[in-house]
Image (cartoon, rainbow, N blue to C red; front, side, top):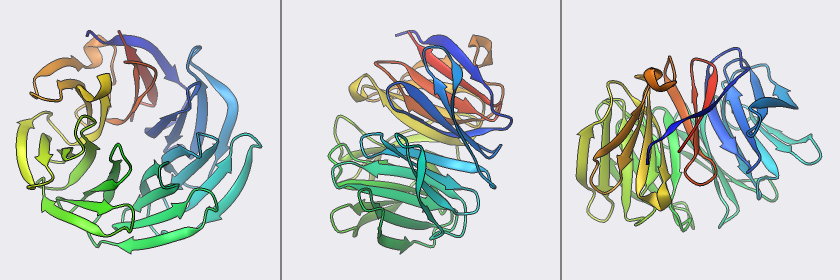
Length: 296
């Protein structure tokens, strides 16, 4: 494959931290305190937008993409119904910025993680709190969900990965992964006994979760790896970094397939978020206030 820039979307007034996609629209959360929605075909903003009093750090579509969860810089968590365009619930469970939101559609759960190392678990039907787990691990930057919904992995600032069983929310394992902190996690889509991680140390690693052994490690970027996604049914992974680049990797061998940077129409600043779209297209978001769509 040879990825190229398909479209560039502008409109935010500050860095963009999170993206999600409902099949038609891209949703974005930004430091400009807005959550916006964009028409993917036209690359223009839809009439839908929400303004907050604090920066929007994370968002997640859930309940078959009919509802939207938004986490703010002060720890506020908002739930919206997209069809009726109304707020369903406003929660103050967290006290620090919510960096990660992930849905588990198998168990009807939504996970939220914050800058204090706390994880909250919500019922996506009732929007009631199911559990609140303090890990005292510094920032939890990302939450990864296994393909079968049975496990989540937490990317923690103390350099450790924590794996939880989603059925009873017990911790299965915990191991040291990266110097300076773990900044991204992704379950191997081909085998959920393996996990990809990216760190503040700029290394990309692959772990055997049965043995907690690192089976691959490579200095993948110049600075922290902020996000990881899978493409081609898990045969390729994509990494986004503070070093302004995006890299495409063979998930099995860790051979680099392609580097996407400013010379190819990429970002000028830190790349903060990635989101898979249709087929082998994906979107990236950056501190340069832009969303870029990539594909063949």
